[in-house]
Length: 268
Image 1 (cartoon, one colour):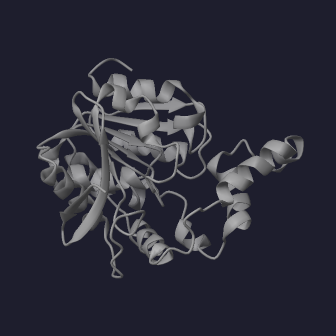
Image 2 (tube, rainbow, N blue to C red):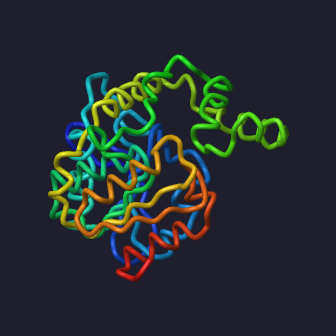
């Protein structure tokens, strides 16, 4: 099992593909055992891609102590160093986009080109949906609650008109094949605690890496108006909306292609 010992803990990572180096930072609850994932798409065909289970998640260590967004960013930088990557393109998705913001601010020399997908700056710029406030919801209850938030088109009327599809999405959202693993619930809670304190708003002007803000038009987790604020705060940032909600990278096949083009320095 490939692990790197960084910052006093073992991080599980995977690496695939060839080309310029790319660090892919996953979102809330990210676990590389869940398939399909980022390695099953087009990114490894274009880049030497590394992704990993963040502290508290998946097959990485789960220390029972307070985590900070700076910790997550420093983990990413230390993993790059351990793998011999002086600099890489970075894609951060949702919570991973928050980590990516901290990474580029704390370790600017590590980041070449940056994609921030369905994420938020926090503070006065706006926060993403407060997952820490619905920790009490589990399984189907949580999936049903988040359905119209993840994609604002999937409201009660849509659910009534698409009962089979609605049931399928609820079942997918409620499933956790690794539920009950030692430290799993604690690690997930620690991540949400750190996420609740995310705030890069006042520092975003320090980002000099070419940046793409990628977002879903119907995202109720990372709101479209927040994406506009985020793009306006980072000098020279490009903003692109895609047809989908928080999972627009799956819903709109042009999204990942646009990210690849941007990272290659092409027009998007």
